Amino acid sequence: MTTPEGAEFEITQGAYATDLALRWVDQAGDDVDISTVANPAIILLDPDGTRTSTVAAYDADVRKNKIKITLANGQLDVAGIWRCQGYGEIAGVYFGHTSIFDFVVVSNL
Image (tube, rainbow, N blue to C red; front, side):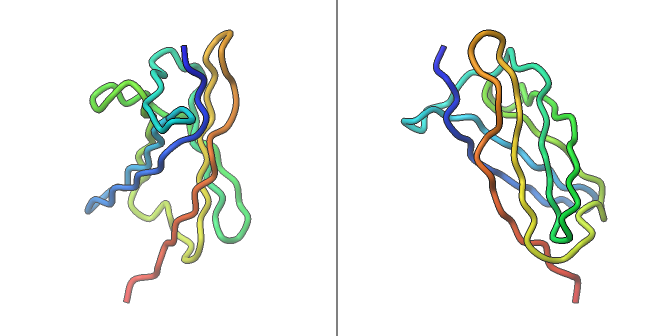
């Protein structure tokens, strides 16, 4: 099995919820199969410095290298720069964090 080296970040905004997804990739940028990942989580750090860790779901509907969380409307409640990082464990192969991704949340007009 190829060891995960990084991740790619995706955010999808819906009318009532927001999906945050992390896609694991190797050094060449190729997908890494994380279908056996244990304890998947996505960690969020808000602009005020509050850290939350949310258990992530393995997103089998999309591909074998993505975990995601769905945030309720209003959960990203502080305007500013947020940080996001994934965590996962693959027995005997890998445990650790993904790259850190920044994204901006803006207030409504």
